[in-house]
Amino acid sequence: MKFFIDTADVAEIRSLIDTGFVDGVTTNPTLIARSGRGMVETIAEICGLVEGPVSAEVTASDLEGMLAEGRFLAKIATNVTIKVPLTPDGLKACRVLTQEGHKVNVTLCFSPAQALLAAKAGATFISPFVGRLDDVGESGMTLIDEIIQIYDHYPHLNTEVLVASVRNPLHVVEAALAGADVVTLPPSVVRQLYNHPLTDKGIALFTADWAKTGQSIL
Ligand code: G3P
Image (cartoon, rainbow, N blue to C red):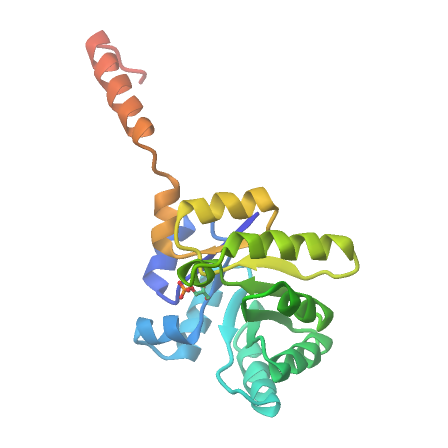
């Protein structure tokens, strides 16, 4: 399962790169706004840091606007993935941009039917939002299971399931158990993945016992 980082904070991305776990980046208008920087310069900088796909989201809501913005964003760098919303015009834009050879991430997916449409429109990635479904009392992970089950029936559909709106390590584990292709992680969740109290306790014990031996390896 690939790990993308869900942020437009370049400093955070820089600090995570040497973990070796950054396979790509996803951004959205909220994350760009939170960064306080210009979108184009931010996406360009991220694309220079990360070899994998970097999602940049269109903000137009009509087909022509999405196509124009998508083509513009794709010129920023070869690893830009154009992100479009799951609307009728978004899926038309997805089909056209895919046919032009661009990678497209269809975002704001909340149902298996929407995910099926995105795959039929040729999406490179479908982004189901698990956290936001959990927030309204629905099961985000049931959605992931159902999308994977549907896509598995039709091997000619090449759309990768990109689990988004991830809030905690359990989402990551459940996405992996379900066989998701990608999970996009806020930096805080990446850091949480390392943690277990028994790891800390074990290190403290080994360190104390080692000190008693008076030895040193080097
Ligand atoms: O980029 C889309 C997504 O991951 C948003 O997450 O936490 O705003 O629901 P969140």
